[in-house]
Image 1 (cartoon, helix red, strand yellow):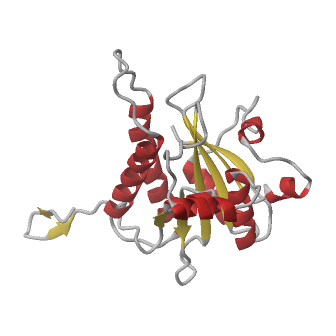
Image 2 (spheres, one colour):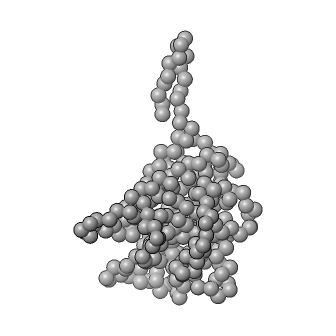
Image 3 (cartoon, one colour):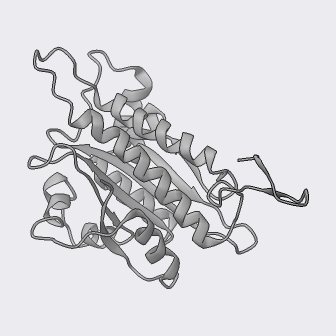
Length: 242
């Protein structure tokens, strides 16, 4: 990037990397986002598949989330996506209240980009909760009490539903019992319909979507579907990140 090539006759031509050149068109947003999350997923997979023969080293769930986010944010910054994509990590209190770990936002700018929010919650192959500290801080106790009887996945679904059809819940599974290094996701803007029918949205409910499924979309295809659907249409799909 920024290098110059001298051609015969003294004409100079700028060499450009089309991914790094700022471009707000939808296609480039989708391509750059896909590149960022796939790199982040590959990075996390290295740790998910690591097995210490002596059993001394274990990354905490929080550390894995941070590795994913740092990798994703770093790559999106390299691709100069600040005007078309942002990532916001939740505070500990927000994680309790909203049931979410972070939010991906695609702001619309002059009609040249996606307009959507993807609210992400990470679940792990063996446990979908991060153990609380021995003595929770007062703010966390208050947040837990304010959340009522809802499970954290249900809190996230209700939060997304309160925003509208352009807000999607993405349950991101780090590892599975059959494939510890896999990263896959369930994306939906319609899970509140199950809540309305009295269903309990927990790990078993979410994993049921994956049973027997042979068809997974890529992160890029996920954004394509979001971009192509009518504004108020429901959308539920499975995504493979590794």
